[in-house]
Length: 283
Image 1 (cartoon, one colour):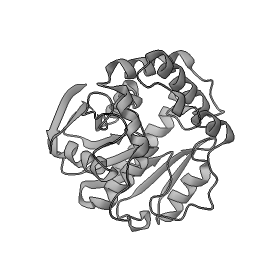
Image 2 (image 1 turned 90 degrees about the vertical axis):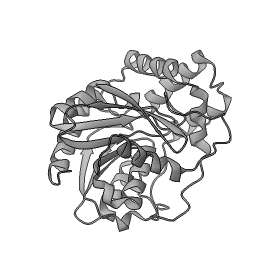
Image 3 (image 1 turned 30 degrees about the vertical axis):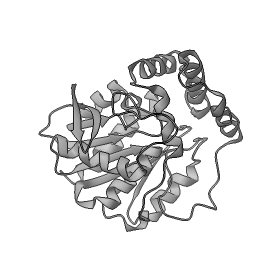
């Protein structure tokens, strides 16, 4: 694993790479308020061992990337989309297989739509289709909505409160197929909090303005893989089905009993799907 800070357009983006840079590049984009640590080290290593050059990075306002005062982010989701291109330019990587999870899945869709020549393929994990009518799709579970209602009560500068809240978040997002690893969740959350420039800045993601231009997933040019847990409590499986059905010839992998998570027990299936998908078009 190697580390590098990409500096461009007044922004610092912390990044890490795994594997041989001569291999096809896979760019990993994580979700709301989540640093690159939520793509676990071992997951990235396993993917790299399958002949991929894996790049992960801290979204702005997470980890070691540029952090702004909480409450009024001076950027939009367009800027976060372009951050992915700043990462590619920084290495430099002409095009990559873009993989995004949750909000990262939405950002990944926008990367592919806004920068089609830089996107060799797209993989969307645990997300929903961009720019399409999703009004008929089911919403988050009652348990998750009850949990999310507590966000406003959290002091995001208080380590103990944040750790408790984020462990509870991980628990409520877990699926039904595998036991919840509370100790593992605690280690990850504590590491994420302690590493961040200002963990509270990540709450800026909750109030971001959307892209200036309307993009629709139906205009996607890159090959599409969709990976979605059948027990996802945030974006029920119907969202993953909708993503796949929006694009001709898309591949849908259902993780049986999987939640809104990257559970280690599912890594082999997830990695195998990404490797097969990215092998169809080399970067």
